[in-house]
Length: 65
View 1 (cartoon, rainbow, N blue to C red):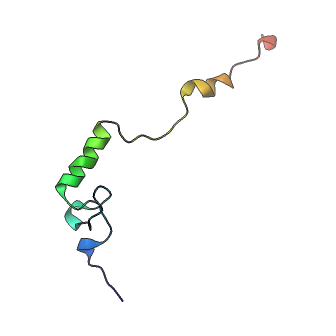
View 2 (spheres, rainbow, N blue to C red):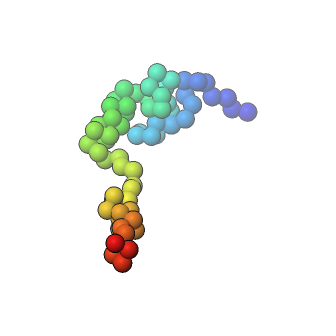
C-alpha cells in the first residue's frame, strides 16, 4: 500500500511534476506564473455561442404587427 503525503499529492498541470502544497495544484511558483500568463494572454477560453445566434430565434413574426 502506497501512501502519499499532502506535499506530493497529484501532478502539476504545466510540467507534470508532483505538486507542492504551497503552490497547489502546481509544483512551483514558476508553473503557477506560467498558468497565470496563459489566462492573461487569453490562451484559455470557454466555448460559447455568439449572442447573435440566440437573437435570431426570438425575433417576432412580421404577420403579427
